[in-house]
Amino acid sequence: MNEEAAPDREAPAQGQAATGAEARESPAKRKRIRLILGIAAIIVLVGGVAWFIRHRSYGQYQQSTEDAYFQADTVAVSARVPGYVEQVLVRSDENVKAGQPLLRIDVRDFSAQAAQGQAQIDLAGANAENARAMIREQEAAIDQAQAMLGVAQSKASFAEGEVARYRPLAASGAEPREKLAQLQAQATQAEQDAAAQKAALEIARRRIAALQAQVSQAQAQERSARAQTQAAQVNVGSALVRASTAGRVGDLTARAGQYVQPGQRLMSIVPVDQLYLEANFKETQVGLMRPGQPVRIEVDALPGIEIRGRVASIAPGTGAQFSLLPPQNATGNFTKIVQRVPVRIAIDADPVLKRALIPGLSVEVTVDTRSGRDELEQLHKLQDAHQAARQ
Image 1 (cartoon, rainbow, N blue to C red):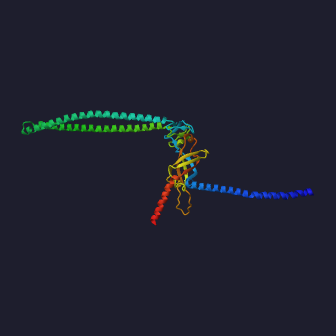
Image 2 (cartoon, one colour):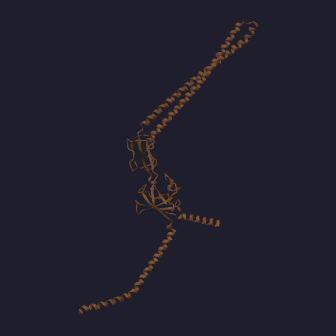
Image 3 (tube, helix red, strand yellow):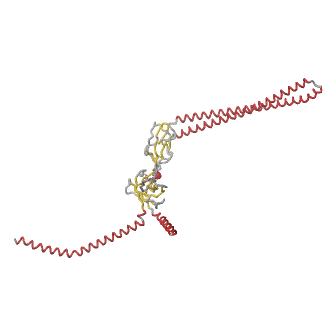
């Protein structure tokens, strides 16, 4: 029993000793806690002030959006002439240069049309030359008719002179009247011959005009045939489809032996070296946005890599304005919806990095709009001045 009571007597003594020690340590511990809390409060206060200062001077001017994607002015490749694809000269995802052949269409029909047009050109030229030869022959006939007309006119003039000379002689009885009648008949016949020669000369001259019209017709036929030949030759050249710009081949659907129509999409050329960003910002974010402002770009496909850019342009309307069916808000029920404004962003990246970027990739962009705050302050001052003037 005594041995069991001894521990009971020792326990209160130990408890009293512990209580005294805690009492001695409590003021120091509380002082240390207050010091830690004070330091933490100072740190939080300093951090809050620093955050507020940074937000007011920097953070509030950073406008971000995830509604942004890489874009490229893709060129749709199509045939200008109908026909069967003879050979496809490129593969999908292949890099091509501007002017590089992409595919060839069978040109035998167009070559035959060009040959036929050349034959028509030769025929029209021969017809024109034949008409010119006939004109030269007719000009000689005109010269002959003019000479014969001169002879006939001379005979008629001589016959008229004889009649005039014999008329007073016949009237006086010195010459018989039969001789005068004979001379008058000869004069009438000479006059009719001269008229006939004059008509023949006029016919020959009109024949020249008809032959010249034949030359003009042949020349027109030659020009028409030449135009048809040139069109056929253009079709022959168009049968070889070339790349209009440098880029990468995508969406290749053309196959050898396939019949294609003009305008049918055969493949696309994506100019991957001319990528840009299309970012759709809320209308509440673009008030201070201006071309030339710096942009930070984070690509989802390249985590940890930050790309620089700059605002190239801002669309002249919201995306809804350029949609196929623009909204009609003049209705009985109206719900305000925050609009999106497309902003084009130019990319400042080295060629090695650009090779990893392809159209359609999602990105997050942040535009530094601090350069627009001065303009906003000027607008505020101008508004204040207008209000003061009205008062």
